[in-house]
Image (cartoon, rainbow, N blue to C red):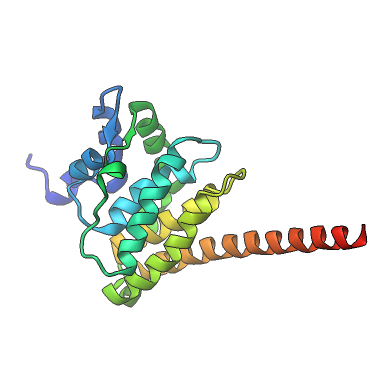
Length: 206
């Protein structure tokens, strides 16, 4: 029996799982991964890079991908049509173990998105709106670089959900991702200001 296109089409998470399965022990560079995805959309690339940032207690890989994520988000702000990475970032490698963790973590923590997402509120996913979304994602990616416990997980979810929404033309998913990331940034700023106020008061009181 001949399979229909709907039966043979792979979802993005299935593609990532197949990528992990096919990877050599040394893994693939970011350029090789992008080539294998065969996808130029910013949403696809950012979703892939955000996956390891969403996995609690996963270290090293979020730091590998955070700077490329920020570079791509900046390109979105400037309205670039296709993602591009400078050589120094494009040659960064994720080994097979890391890709496998990404695939398993993506299925565990974000598999539900594939079931719920569909095209809606598409004005949020247009080219003009994409620039605004990119500005938010730059801030979220900067938060991932903060060397504090759990600083990558929540903004990672924000980036992943928003970028998946861009890819699927799901404006509600984009909004949800931006809200998650913005609330986290607000909490960080509030904590920083509270801490600074406390230290200043302690210093003046002494």
